[in-house]
Image (cartoon, rainbow, N blue to C red; front, top):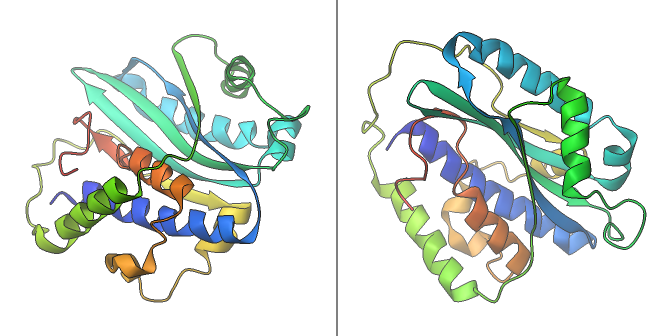
Length: 230
């Protein structure tokens, strides 16, 4: 199994666990935010990735974002299609309980405006915001989670694609901040704790929906549009 997709699966389980821990402690809302760029040429990809990460850090220092959010998990995902790159940062985002009820709510157009400001560009921007809504899908999600665990346990690590010439410089692909970093720092010492589904709260419908969405995320460069194992 390609190690990057294995890492994607591992992070989906880890973040499912973190979400349930947060939900046990306090009422929060959850968003899935994507910010990125479209149609980046190979000769510009490394500079664009630098700008993307700098812009992301700048975005989360803006007062309106910092006030409304409680931290984040972020993943840098770079899709290559033909000779063009489409880098995006996927963000798991807990927000304050009253996020949708008052002046702290940020519409998609405002996210786009702030993302353009943070990057200092107006063309080829990508922004998508999704509210995580609970769904009554516990049985289906348990089956999907068991399927993913079987993949992690049974597929040999040696099944990896051949690497092309190195195009993209090494970067930190994931990161946690604030509330989610606090929970990540308190994860069980056994790094494979999530391989036992008994350790996961599959009755948390918010965590289940987030898990389902995170299966499509990938850390680093890829050519596949979807996780080939789920």
